[in-house]
Image 1 (cartoon, helix red, strand yellow):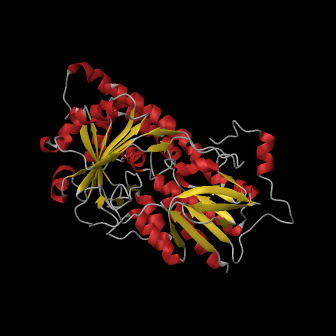
Image 2: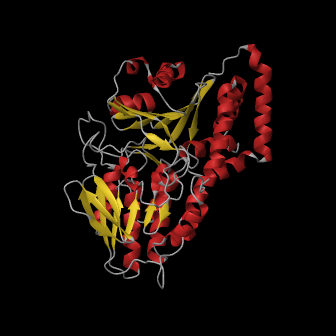
Image 3: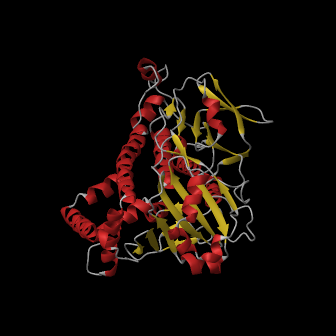
Length: 468
């Protein structure tokens, strides 16, 4: 949840009051807007801002500041992402007119393979659709041999430039106040003054430090370190090993919340999320029997193409807006562990809608943008409870057996309603809010089946039966 912890409440109350004058500041013809960062959040914001302004006849200038070149392989074009676009987001973006072409989607994922020490089970898409996309945020790892795929972030950036935004290539090195407006400056350039500043730099960028001392009460989200590694295998080998499934691992490894291996064209991505991922935890995961069994012996000796240890936010920022400035995407609030691109879309659209139709004062953002942030943050609190329950399953073999038995029965019996499968699917993909997933687990039929499988697993626990 957001709070004003660490800040004087009187000071915060003053900050959300409209600027002095007959009305709060608004965008009109000739207004200039700076967007720092053209990852998903920055590009979505720019796209919707220009589109909505055009609808009501406002001519605004949008400058997008970005130091990365998404047409280049890592590290020059890397944006540090595991690269999954949920099925619900694909459909939502299509309804907005943002279609993801086959050159952007690396491989349609039609199932999840859940691996545990008690067995592995395939979970099919609910509607048998290949609607989950694996993408590269840049143009691929550092050793990419051939540019077969278009960057996801680069594709969004092109859409924004086609809409009329200007791209300013360079890293912002100075942000200052100019009366009530903001000045933005890149190295070697002069300062530009803007009527609105949208910040979409994630939480791994030093740009956030530039806001210290500007008296906007912003505090970045709390974060934890994660791990992403890419391996080159070639498309044929990727298909042989992983098929069109994303492989998820529920293992009893301390501090590991979520682990997945994702097929992406010629590459596979290993993604680990948890509490302060380090080399020891990574090695424990790679050495586990379940991972080695999944990846085949010939894969185990391969060196990674590239890897990174990005931080991800685990709590929303404090006061992600003030007069004429708004923080969106990861540096504002994002979904816990899942669907970061979806959260970028929601916060970006809410911020753009507020700026165009309501105004750009702190009071406007507090009334129309902050509720969207709080909804995501509140849902994350439920997500934390869900992951606490998952950790209890990870620690207890009988619980893992119960989960395996219930899921396997649903997947092999065509007539059975797939209650556990749907819960797992939406936890893996982020296609549904954590609240909705949690409420499904309270259904009497779900609870009865789960308790039955727990009882059977406890009674058979000491018999040494294999369920592989």
